[in-house]
Image (cartoon, rainbow, N blue to C red; front, side, top):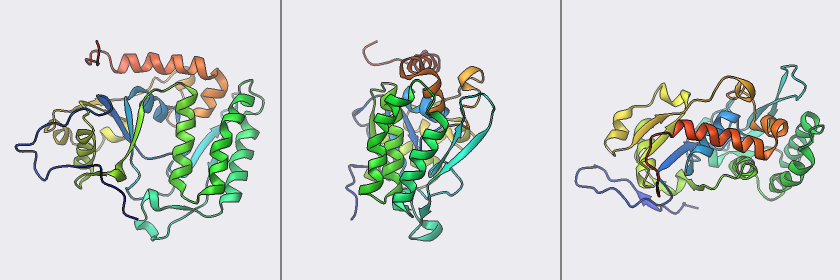
Length: 266
Protein backbone atom coordinates (compact mmCIF):
# COMPACT_ATOMS: atom_id res chain seq x y z
CA UNK A 1 0.00 0.00 0.00
CA UNK A 2 1.40 3.39 -1.00
CA UNK A 3 1.52 5.80 1.95
CA UNK A 4 -0.43 9.03 1.74
CA UNK A 5 1.88 11.94 1.04
CA UNK A 6 0.75 14.89 3.14
CA UNK A 7 3.18 17.42 1.77
CA UNK A 8 5.88 17.60 -0.87
CA UNK A 9 9.00 19.69 -1.14
CA UNK A 10 9.43 21.91 -4.20
CA UNK A 11 11.98 20.98 -6.86
CA UNK A 12 13.49 24.39 -6.23
CA UNK A 13 13.05 26.80 -3.36
CA UNK A 14 13.06 29.79 -5.76
CA UNK A 15 9.74 31.58 -5.53
CA UNK A 16 8.42 29.20 -2.86
CA UNK A 17 6.99 30.44 0.39
CA UNK A 18 7.56 29.01 3.84
CA UNK A 19 4.62 26.84 4.91
CA UNK A 20 2.53 27.74 7.90
CA UNK A 21 4.00 26.06 11.01
CA UNK A 22 1.94 22.98 11.77
CA UNK A 23 3.25 21.59 15.04
CA UNK A 24 5.84 23.98 16.42
CA UNK A 25 9.16 25.52 15.63
CA UNK A 26 11.78 23.07 16.92
CA UNK A 27 11.93 19.63 15.34
CA UNK A 28 13.98 16.49 15.79
CA UNK A 29 14.30 13.83 13.11
CA UNK A 30 15.33 10.37 14.20
CA UNK A 31 14.82 6.71 13.32
CA UNK A 32 12.52 4.69 15.57
CA UNK A 33 14.77 3.06 18.16
CA UNK A 34 14.10 0.25 20.60
CA UNK A 35 13.87 1.83 24.07
CA UNK A 36 16.19 4.63 22.92
CA UNK A 37 19.30 5.86 24.66
CA UNK A 38 18.96 8.71 27.14
CA UNK A 39 20.70 11.10 24.73
CA UNK A 40 18.15 10.30 22.03
CA UNK A 41 15.22 10.64 24.41
CA UNK A 42 16.56 13.99 25.60
CA UNK A 43 16.78 15.30 22.03
CA UNK A 44 13.21 14.26 21.27
CA UNK A 45 12.00 15.74 24.56
CA UNK A 46 13.59 19.09 23.67
CA UNK A 47 11.68 19.27 20.38
CA UNK A 48 8.14 20.43 19.67
CA UNK A 49 7.72 17.43 17.42
CA UNK A 50 9.52 14.31 16.29
CA UNK A 51 9.62 13.28 12.66
CA UNK A 52 10.05 9.51 12.71
CA UNK A 53 12.57 8.71 9.99
CA UNK A 54 11.01 5.40 8.99
CA UNK A 55 11.57 5.18 5.22
CA UNK A 56 15.37 5.13 5.10
CA UNK A 57 17.47 1.97 4.82
CA UNK A 58 17.50 -0.30 7.84
CA UNK A 59 20.93 -0.62 9.43
CA UNK A 60 21.91 -3.76 11.27
CA UNK A 61 24.02 -3.47 14.41
CA UNK A 62 22.43 -0.10 15.10
CA UNK A 63 19.80 0.96 17.63
CA UNK A 64 16.86 0.36 15.29
CA UNK A 65 16.36 -3.18 16.58
CA UNK A 66 18.39 -3.30 19.78
CA UNK A 67 19.28 -1.39 22.91
CA UNK A 68 21.87 -1.66 25.63
CA UNK A 69 20.63 -2.32 29.17
CA UNK A 70 22.65 -1.55 32.28
CA UNK A 71 22.13 -2.98 35.74
CA UNK A 72 21.23 -0.67 38.61
CA UNK A 73 24.01 -1.87 40.88
CA UNK A 74 26.67 0.40 39.43
CA UNK A 75 28.86 -2.47 38.19
CA UNK A 76 29.14 -0.87 34.76
CA UNK A 77 28.14 -4.10 33.05
CA UNK A 78 25.76 -3.83 30.11
CA UNK A 79 23.86 -6.29 27.97
CA UNK A 80 22.30 -6.01 24.54
CA UNK A 81 18.56 -6.50 24.18
CA UNK A 82 18.08 -7.35 20.51
CA UNK A 83 14.99 -8.12 18.43
CA UNK A 84 15.48 -10.72 15.71
CA UNK A 85 14.71 -8.95 12.44
CA UNK A 86 13.93 -10.18 8.92
CA UNK A 87 14.70 -7.97 5.90
CA UNK A 88 12.36 -8.97 3.02
CA UNK A 89 14.38 -6.97 0.47
CA UNK A 90 17.82 -7.67 1.85
CA UNK A 91 20.09 -4.74 2.61
CA UNK A 92 17.77 -2.42 0.63
CA UNK A 93 14.92 -2.95 3.10
CA UNK A 94 13.66 0.25 4.70
CA UNK A 95 13.04 0.59 8.41
CA UNK A 96 9.27 0.43 7.92
CA UNK A 97 9.77 -2.64 5.73
CA UNK A 98 11.71 -4.61 8.36
CA UNK A 99 9.81 -7.46 9.99
CA UNK A 100 10.04 -9.28 13.31
CA UNK A 101 11.53 -12.72 12.69
CA UNK A 102 9.74 -14.36 15.64
CA UNK A 103 7.30 -11.96 17.37
CA UNK A 104 6.40 -14.31 20.23
CA UNK A 105 10.02 -14.98 21.09
CA UNK A 106 10.84 -11.27 20.80
CA UNK A 107 8.09 -10.43 23.25
CA UNK A 108 9.37 -12.94 25.79
CA UNK A 109 12.92 -11.66 25.45
CA UNK A 110 11.95 -8.02 25.89
CA UNK A 111 9.82 -8.75 28.96
CA UNK A 112 12.41 -11.04 30.55
CA UNK A 113 15.51 -8.91 30.07
CA UNK A 114 13.82 -5.72 31.26
CA UNK A 115 12.58 -7.54 34.35
CA UNK A 116 16.01 -9.10 34.98
CA UNK A 117 17.66 -5.68 35.01
CA UNK A 118 15.06 -3.48 36.70
CA UNK A 119 12.68 -5.57 38.79
CA UNK A 120 14.29 -4.32 42.02
CA UNK A 121 13.70 -0.66 41.21
CA UNK A 122 10.88 0.99 43.20
CA UNK A 123 9.69 2.38 39.88
CA UNK A 124 9.50 -1.00 38.13
CA UNK A 125 5.91 -2.03 39.12
CA UNK A 126 4.39 1.10 37.57
CA UNK A 127 6.61 0.89 34.50
CA UNK A 128 5.78 -2.80 34.05
CA UNK A 129 2.09 -1.93 33.83
CA UNK A 130 2.78 0.82 31.29
CA UNK A 131 4.91 -1.63 29.31
CA UNK A 132 1.98 -3.92 28.53
CA UNK A 133 0.82 -2.12 25.33
CA UNK A 134 4.35 -2.42 23.90
CA UNK A 135 4.46 -6.14 24.66
CA UNK A 136 0.95 -6.59 23.26
CA UNK A 137 2.09 -5.05 19.97
CA UNK A 138 4.18 -8.17 19.31
CA UNK A 139 0.90 -10.11 19.08
CA UNK A 140 -0.78 -7.90 16.51
CA UNK A 141 2.02 -6.83 14.18
CA UNK A 142 5.24 -8.12 12.69
CA UNK A 143 6.44 -4.63 11.75
CA UNK A 144 9.59 -3.78 13.65
CA UNK A 145 8.98 -0.01 13.37
CA UNK A 146 5.58 -0.30 15.05
CA UNK A 147 7.10 -1.88 18.14
CA UNK A 148 10.19 0.31 18.36
CA UNK A 149 8.19 3.51 17.91
CA UNK A 150 5.82 2.37 20.65
CA UNK A 151 8.76 1.79 22.98
CA UNK A 152 9.94 5.36 22.37
CA UNK A 153 6.43 6.75 22.80
CA UNK A 154 6.21 4.97 26.14
CA UNK A 155 9.35 6.65 27.45
CA UNK A 156 8.23 10.05 26.16
CA UNK A 157 4.88 9.62 27.86
CA UNK A 158 6.57 8.59 31.10
CA UNK A 159 8.38 11.94 31.25
CA UNK A 160 5.35 13.96 30.18
CA UNK A 161 6.44 15.06 26.71
CA UNK A 162 3.70 17.19 25.15
CA UNK A 163 4.98 17.18 21.56
CA UNK A 164 3.60 15.54 18.45
CA UNK A 165 4.81 12.87 16.06
CA UNK A 166 4.99 12.77 12.26
CA UNK A 167 6.47 10.19 9.89
CA UNK A 168 8.88 10.80 7.04
CA UNK A 169 7.02 8.18 4.98
CA UNK A 170 4.08 10.63 4.86
CA UNK A 171 6.25 13.50 3.61
CA UNK A 172 7.66 13.77 0.11
CA UNK A 173 11.20 15.15 0.40
CA UNK A 174 14.11 15.24 -2.02
CA UNK A 175 17.05 12.87 -1.90
CA UNK A 176 20.46 13.53 -0.44
CA UNK A 177 21.16 13.09 3.24
CA UNK A 178 21.22 16.71 4.36
CA UNK A 179 18.77 17.87 1.71
CA UNK A 180 16.20 15.34 2.80
CA UNK A 181 16.41 16.32 6.47
CA UNK A 182 16.20 20.01 5.57
CA UNK A 183 13.13 19.40 3.40
CA UNK A 184 11.41 17.40 6.13
CA UNK A 185 12.02 20.16 8.64
CA UNK A 186 10.83 22.84 6.20
CA UNK A 187 7.68 20.94 5.24
CA UNK A 188 6.51 20.98 8.84
CA UNK A 189 7.27 24.62 9.47
CA UNK A 190 10.37 24.23 11.60
CA UNK A 191 12.66 27.17 12.23
CA UNK A 192 15.13 25.13 14.31
CA UNK A 193 16.50 21.63 13.73
CA UNK A 194 18.04 19.77 16.65
CA UNK A 195 21.09 17.82 15.51
CA UNK A 196 22.91 15.25 17.62
CA UNK A 197 26.67 14.82 17.72
CA UNK A 198 26.61 12.07 15.09
CA UNK A 199 24.63 14.16 12.62
CA UNK A 200 26.90 17.17 13.05
CA UNK A 201 29.75 15.15 11.52
CA UNK A 202 28.05 14.89 8.11
CA UNK A 203 25.33 17.52 8.01
CA UNK A 204 25.58 20.31 5.44
CA UNK A 205 24.17 23.45 7.11
CA UNK A 206 23.71 25.18 3.75
CA UNK A 207 20.80 22.85 2.94
CA UNK A 208 19.02 24.26 6.00
CA UNK A 209 20.02 27.89 5.46
CA UNK A 210 18.15 27.88 2.16
CA UNK A 211 14.99 27.30 4.22
CA UNK A 212 16.04 29.79 6.95
CA UNK A 213 16.27 26.93 9.43
CA UNK A 214 18.83 27.10 12.22
CA UNK A 215 20.79 23.90 12.90
CA UNK A 216 21.18 23.68 16.67
CA UNK A 217 23.77 21.18 17.98
CA UNK A 218 22.36 18.99 20.72
CA UNK A 219 24.74 17.54 23.29
CA UNK A 220 24.11 15.94 26.64
CA UNK A 221 26.18 16.46 29.82
CA UNK A 222 28.74 13.86 30.83
CA UNK A 223 28.23 13.55 34.57
CA UNK A 224 25.72 11.74 36.76
CA UNK A 225 22.93 9.99 34.90
CA UNK A 226 24.31 11.45 31.66
CA UNK A 227 27.62 9.59 31.86
CA UNK A 228 26.32 6.72 29.73
CA UNK A 229 23.59 8.69 27.94
CA UNK A 230 24.92 7.92 24.45
CA UNK A 231 25.24 4.19 25.10
CA UNK A 232 22.56 2.93 27.50
CA UNK A 233 18.77 2.87 27.19
CA UNK A 234 16.90 5.66 28.95
CA UNK A 235 15.03 2.95 30.86
CA UNK A 236 17.99 2.85 33.26
CA UNK A 237 17.68 6.54 34.15
CA UNK A 238 13.92 6.13 34.48
CA UNK A 239 14.34 3.24 36.90
CA UNK A 240 16.96 5.14 38.90
CA UNK A 241 15.19 8.49 39.19
CA UNK A 242 11.55 7.87 38.43
CA UNK A 243 9.44 9.80 35.90
CA UNK A 244 9.18 13.11 37.78
CA UNK A 245 12.88 13.48 38.59
CA UNK A 246 13.92 12.40 35.10
CA UNK A 247 11.53 14.92 33.59
CA UNK A 248 13.19 17.60 35.71
CA UNK A 249 16.59 16.64 34.30
CA UNK A 250 15.25 16.70 30.74
CA UNK A 251 13.53 20.05 31.20
CA UNK A 252 16.69 21.61 32.61
CA UNK A 253 18.72 20.36 29.66
CA UNK A 254 16.11 21.54 27.17
CA UNK A 255 16.17 24.99 28.75
CA UNK A 256 19.95 25.22 28.37
CA UNK A 257 19.96 23.97 24.78
CA UNK A 258 17.11 26.18 23.58
CA UNK A 259 18.17 29.28 25.50
CA UNK A 260 17.90 32.35 23.32
CA UNK A 261 15.58 30.83 20.70
CA UNK A 262 12.32 32.82 20.44
CA UNK A 263 9.44 30.55 21.47
CA UNK A 264 5.75 30.89 20.62
CA UNK A 265 3.94 32.97 23.23
CA UNK A 266 7.13 34.41 24.68
